[in-house]
Image (cartoon, rainbow, N blue to C red; front, top):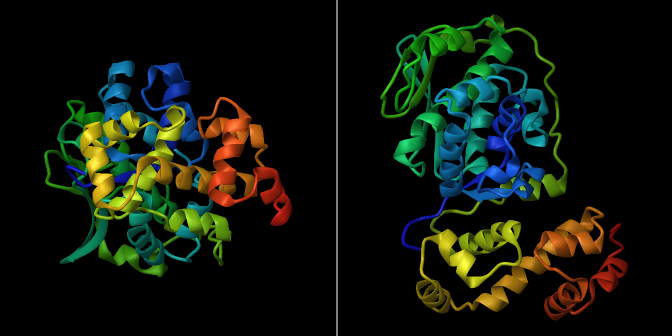
Length: 336
């Protein structure tokens, strides 16, 4: 690729997406990202697609503060199995550690760290993959999330010591009202400050934390599957999978998503010892198996992968798996 390709899970945008549709009456057809992307919160989408979506959201709502307003309405208890894992510890320190450790499985190129500076702990977020003209939206989104985590343990009225954000917005009072503290703009990264003594369990309120991992094997498989931006084989695999949301993957579509011409993409595939038809069949047959394991009817499996008729899907699957989809289900006793 001309540059490293980063991905983010639909989960990171889902709450804002759902709230914006409800609050502003936005029709999903007005977004360039297909609505099917948001049907599974664990779906991966390219970060550059997220950047386009953030620009569209501000344009459609005509509200520069839409991210703060919509992210503040997100319920952390409704983020699924990943949320259960994040909050399965007993105190704030273990939760911060899990979130810092797990952020790379939610969005590649992103880094969360905690820095002790005197009597303060500064929770820092960086993501160099986000376009400069939407960094403010991404920064606000993450600062709201981090503040919500702190309020889960320190009380709903808790106010950080200071919040540092990238980019700028004009409505300073709106942001200071939400965070309850001084908000500083045009910072090099996102930071949420708190007194370090608040990390002590004795200063925290009890939560309904789960005591064990609330994630099945299939959830764990998906969670761990985040491509390294330098792993071109896996990036191509995930980009072909993502392009299924637009219909049956084509060389032209995937090339565009990667920022390459068709000729450049074909040369890149050749250099990696791959060809488009073979790798596409590998991706689609793997995706089909995942859907079949979850009892998705075969006609719907075919449709989700972009096929307009079941016969074409059956031929592709048998070519790459040696069995028809029905035979595969019977042989491995899948419930689909």
